Image 1 (cartoon, rainbow, N blue to C red):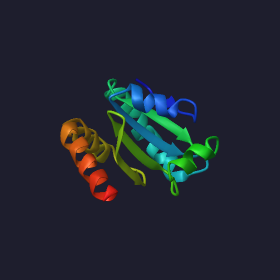
Image 2 (image 1 turned 120 degrees about the vertical axis):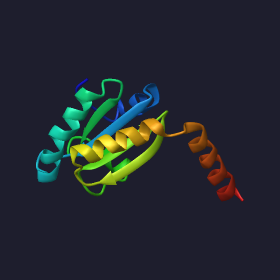
Image 3 (image 1 turned 120 degrees about the horizontal axis):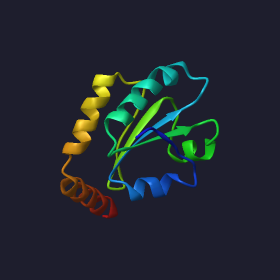
Length: 124
């Protein structure tokens, strides 16, 4: 599967309707973004069960702002609708593959339990 362009209108439904979503926040003028683009595209073809989305931060400034993007490229990962990874900077192919493997290996019941504990603690 190749990458899909995400917009304010499609962002939330894409995250909610798919098990694993990786999102590259980028801009055309950004050199590191242009270097990471082919790495991201190659991974999208190697993992057709994962949605690889791209957000053009110039065209989608409100979305980038809402997601707290202050540096590009920034890669975000969601699993079962939960944000589990966000980090700026271009990645090498091997690093991206390791991240994908780690996302697949996550125990989401454990992640949800941890979120519940954190929410309960902050409510006190």
